[in-house]
Image (tube, rainbow, N blue to C red):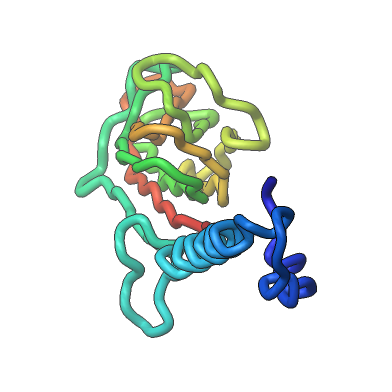
Amino acid sequence: MKRSFAAILLFGSLAHAEGPLFQHKESVIQQEYENVYQSIRQALSNKGTATNDNALSGDRGQYISSVTATATNFPATTVFGDILSMPLTPGDWDITAVLAFEPNGSTSTNFTIGISSFSGTSSTGLSNGINRLTRTLGSSGTDNTTVPNIRFSVFSSTTVYLKYVATYSAGQPQAIGSLIARRPR
């Protein structure tokens, strides 16, 4: 029978009781203290950082990012592509995507970005207004957009992708993108 830590504190005087009802009292109390100790140890091992350095890998507050080094051509008009990817280890992650669009001589009407765990030309898993945003371009054509803080709960190591697609003609637009992830817990 599992006892709560509070019950042990409230009824700690039972540790001095005797008789068959209490013959295993010491092992039960010891086990409960061990359970509490392990819970506290786990919480402290996930502590993050208390200064201006970076949290360790696996700790709360861990920060990772992936950024394109140079402007990258969009895939063919209306075809999704992956401008970059970022590996994630198991746990919860808050991920933000940013993409800067440059017409590069093209006639462009809009572009879409999204965060997905599916690679290639697929738009699988993208949901408008949640992890997918579309921008209609003005006369200058240059624009940028952000998909802010989408939660990814990762069971085993996986890769997430910054997806992008544009509707354009007469040239090929380019983009620079980034994915930023922080472990919130």
